[in-house]
Amino acid sequence: MTAKIIDGKAFAEGLRTRIAGHVARLKAEHGITPGLAVVIVGEDPGSQVYVRNKAKQTVEVGMHSEKYELPAETPEADVLALVERLNADPAIHGILVQLPVPKHIDPNKVVLALSPDKDVDCFTPASVGKLQIGLPGPVSCTPLGCLMLLRDTLGSLEGLNAVIVGRSNLVGKPMAQLLLRENCTVTVAHSKTKNLAELVRQADIVVAAVGRPQMIKGDCIKPGATIIDVGINRVPAPEKGEGKTRLVGDVDYESAAAVAGAITPVPGGVGPMTIACLLANTVTTASLINGLVPPKDLTP
Image (cartoon, rainbow, N blue to C red):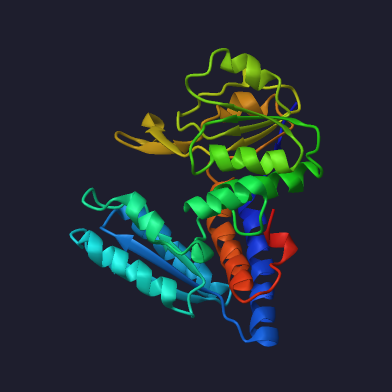
C-alpha cells in the first residue's frame, strides 16, 4: 500500500481563497474589514520569518494588518499596555502575541491580558472553555487545520478510533476536543504512555504532536489509517554536507507511508494550514464581535 499524500499547502491555498471571499463580503455588505495585529518581542529569527509570513498573507486576503516588533528588552508592563490598547482598538479583531517571549516577561500574564473576543490563537481560559462546552468561537489554529485536512480526506469522522500522541495545550488537548465533537472515539497518549505502539496500531486516525523526531514507525500503523503529522523537527542531514539539517515529523514518513491510507508530509502538510487558520479565525472573531454568524466553512 502506498499512502495518499495529504497536500496541506494546496488545501491552505484554497482556504485562503475562500477567506478572501468572506473578507470581501464583510466589506461590501457590512463595512467591516477584519483586522489582525501580531506582536513579537525579541529577535528570534524563526519567529520573525513566521510573523512576516502572517502579515503578508493577512494583506493578501484583503484584511487589515498591524505588526509590532518590540526589542527584547521591552519591559513586561509595556507589552501588557500594548495588548490592552489593541483590545480597545475597534479596527483590530484578532491579536496574536508571538511566543516564546523573553524570560523577563510572564507569558501567562500576556495571555490573560488578551481580550477573549480577539484571542485568535485560543490561549485564554475563556477560549479554552468555549471549546470544551461547544460554544461558538475560534479554536486553536493548528488543530483546526488538522481537522479540516481530516474532513477533506475522510468525509465523516463519526465512529472512527483516533489516537492523539501529545497532550500539549496548543495541539493535543484541543485536538481531542475537536475529534470528540466529530463523534470519534478519542485516546490521548504521550511520551510516557505504556504500550504506545499497541494503542497507535488500533487507530483509524493518528495525530502525532509529541515533538520527537520520527518516533512513530510504520510497524505500529494500522493498514489504511490516516496520519496527521504535526511534528516539525530538525535532524542532521550529512548527505547534504557537514552541519546541514533537514525537517522531519514525529512520524517516520517512509515506513508509515508504506502502510497508511493517507499521510501528511513534513514539510508541506500541517504547517501551511496554521497561518491560513489564523486568518480564518480572524474572520470568525470579526463576525462575532459585530453580531454576525461566522462562515460555516471556517469553523468546526
